[in-house]
Image (tube, rainbow, N blue to C red; front, side):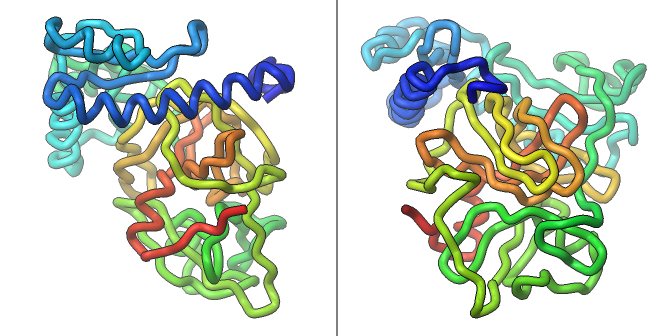
Length: 311
């Protein structure tokens, strides 16, 4: 966090405490505001949670919880419904369209496309979207060192009872090989990008991501600081971006990912995302030079009934 976010130790500790409180406030206001909830994000400039509200008469509900409230035109439910509609017609999207997501800060749907493909993106998604041009995302698998699947490697994510979670494409895209430290307990890709490995009896499991002890799996707000450990780029930090993002890799489309500006590269696939407070966030899926996507942890644990190791 000192290197990537420019924070000294006292500032990092203060940020962690503030973000934990913001995450709890977001969940509380999601329920309290109901259909008026217009999304939320953490504003590092003010160290406050910013909450969108579609009904001006309910602004006080948000401010009473200590959040900064602003009137927005679209509810979170409306924006999520737009994503569901795009997901339903994903098969008809041109190859130049690489994904879509909800921008909680701007309160709008964003479609990502290859450079020069804005017109094609709007023709597919409609004019009421913002198009962002960027390089194509790619999944991260390559030969090297970490855990091996034949001649390829990926990164351990977070440990669970009996093994660890990682990226699903580390299984699917590498053929029928087994990890060198265990056997696949289950995997899903595309659609999702998660898997878990039942480790061999001699493998020692620790509740750590990098040097940070895992204490839980509370989801951090958009804008919150987050770090990841991967076998290629090591320990890198940044902030949580848009959630529930659809990403169209060349190998298949994955929905429900979370974006970040954390640095990651080939071989980091499956590596664990975590906050400095020890809240596990997910595992590296893929990305490009500007964005690293991660598969949220809660869905992986739920899909396979796994129990997260905590310290």
